[in-house]
Length: 134
Image 1 (cartoon, rainbow, N blue to C red):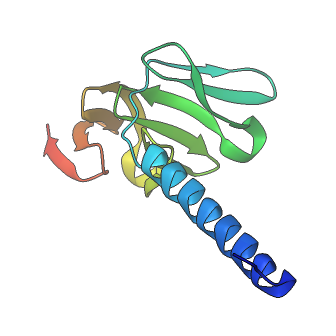
Image 2 (cartoon, rainbow, N blue to C red):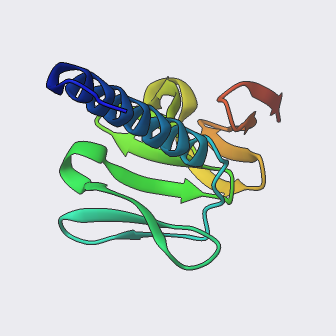
């Protein structure tokens, strides 16, 4: 079977295009898997997020990201300026809440967090929706 040079170039380009598409499909499938946070380390420069196997799966510059005020296995909360930013375990921003509306975050556990604003203590879910006030 005899291929011309032009046909071989087309076949090579098609082959490499398929390889690139497969690579991106595999990468997207792996990144869409839900992570589980076991530990968040903040150094003077970096923030490292570890999975249940003890491996770092996310690293970012601390000055751009902010300070972690609490985390559980499914989400974490960052304090940045006058806002709290809620992230899921895959490090995607879920919601941004004003510090003046929320108050001080007391604890993060399971799929909820509690905050104290004045004499009120409020419970929120991991998306920032208020569940209870007392």
